[in-house]
Image: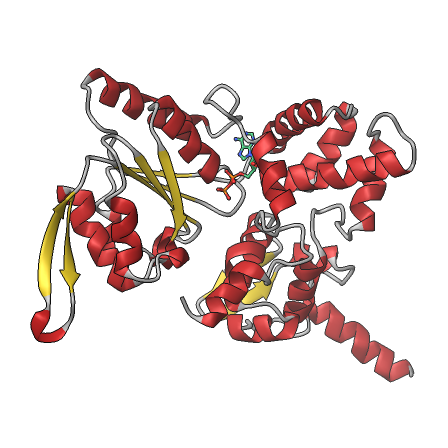
Length: 357
Ligand code: ADP
């Protein structure tokens, strides 16, 4: 793992509503709200159906479930699904992450501890170092690993046989996985952002678990500004819950939800400060496309973070477009910033301004 990668993981989302569950309190909160079975897992019907079928079929044949790759943006439920699969299989689930597997011996240590039908969950699997990835290939395919003892002339290869296990990988960047790696997964499922009505259901469930009543229209407002992401919806709910408590409201009503959102800088389009800075950077270049590096430097975030976290939402809501030469703001994006829809009218109005100045 390069130092810049660790910065992406730990700091890049800091202060943003988009941060992965970083602190112990965040993780605790996520675990309380995590759906425990397929019935509690809202939405993503196609993915859930496919996984249930694979699960039932494997059970019926008394076989180990094939390796599963879950891909999609952060906070959409990949970890939750992995845990649900583990519990449906009645399996022990070992959890690690790509960046944590720094050396082959880290992986071999975990693999050799796995029992028959256990699940190994590797989060951020696209960040697994190439040297470790190679060991995963034979482990996934033949349930063996060749472990090299010592170095130089004393080196000996020790073939180790492993229990038949299921690897569940989660990735936010499926495209970064090499083809041989991807091909070793029998089941590949992609999670997509949730429609507002699913997020409303998730929020209602979370509010009930947290014991904080929420009005349906307040849930709708929070849901519609959550970038299609349950993790963000739950975070915003937590902010609204704080405000309700401090202001002495028994229920999260619409007005209070709106106030909570605007206090943390989330606007009616669900945009936060970094999104607006990205858009302003693009708008300042008129109709000229802008490269990722320039955007990252202008807004003070890493290229990875812009590409993985901020850009997908801006693309999805049609505020940004990608061309072969770079990123551009769309007319709708300009309007959201309070600018005229076309950069020409901008130029025209400033020319007019100059004329009369
Ligand atoms: P990922 O691994 O994709 O980053 P997680 O599985 O950790 O996402 O989900 C983050 C949080 O969002 C979970 O703790 C859970 O509370 C909530 N969540 C995600 N997907 C769903 C869902 N389909 N139904 C209900 N809650 C969900």
